[in-house]
Amino acid sequence: MKFDKTLFVLALGVFGITTTEFGVIGILPELASVFNVSIDKAGWLLSAFAIIVAVFGPLMVWLLSSYDRKKLLILSLVIFAVSNVLSSLATNFTFLLIVRMLPAFFHPVYWSIALAVAVENTAPNQSSKAVSTIFSGLTIATVLGVPLATLLVDVLNWQSSFLLSALLNIISLIGLIGLLPPIKASDKKEEYSKKTILRKPILWLNILLAFCIITAMYSTYGYMADFLKSVSRMNGKEVSIMLFFFGITGIIGNRMVGKYMSSKPFETTFIFLVALIGVHFLLLVFGSYFVPIIVIVGIWGLIHTGGFLISNVSVASSVPEAQEFVNSIFTSCGNLAVTAGATIGGFWIVHFGIQQIVWSSILLLGLSLVILLVKKVLRWK
Image (tube, rainbow, N blue to C red; front, side, top):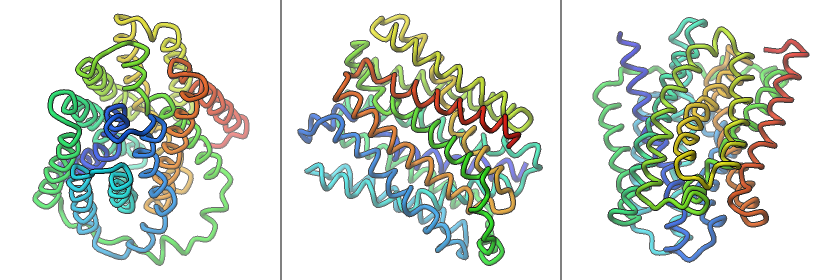
């Protein structure tokens, strides 16, 4: 029960930082309009954050690995809260972009510690369930944080969305301070002296698979609000409800993946990829119809949310003896993939139109399926 409490407190922090990172997804059209920039340029509010994480993730984890891990978690949330307050005060796009990048340096620190603690304190056959609890913070951010940020823009203003993220960071911070037990620093010398870690072919193949999966996910999802407004012709309140519905079904999907990923990793990943390809085809065909898109969004959320968990378990299982370092690599990979997804999605919108954006995801998911089958042929887990 004590460890269960630790997992849920760590997930609360993930909820706070994920709302900060992805809360802009639902308000990109509004921010593009307010600051007089194109929608693909506004997408850099998401991708610039991710670039910082991708470039500096492993380095930050390595530099700070000898410090008290609870204090690092608290410091990370403080920086996230301050950044959101500054974002609400932005008067131009450049300033907003810069202050959005500040907490990105500590994003991988929080994620790596949380995921490592989950795996280190769980039996091997239960590790994916523990990780799924941590990822539930991401899912709940999708359920509450992103749609609330979108709704506040429609009801109040765009500044209130960033203030909401700051409030969530503060609530998470209070939870960490009051409920999280001390977490000793990792053994830096032991963990990072293994020169063979980065020489494992299975690690790089799983990183490539994770990169393709997450890029595919965010190529379309990163512009979900714009798709629903432009193609499905929904207003701001309807879009926020759809984002909420997307996240609600995602909670179920996340738990399902956590249940089966440890025992049946190949089958779970294969079904996920095929199902997500199918959903994107449905978006292409029925995206402009109001009632069908409601059903499709629910199915989309059910499937989509498991992608991060599947990717993390695949990468982390490559090097079980160095969880914190490998999780920092995964965090960098995941955020680089988010950047790639936002960039590809923006490019697709500019050159082919918002309705055709799903093809970018379909092609990348097809590539992911090929990589998974290569792993199967090579008998790599």
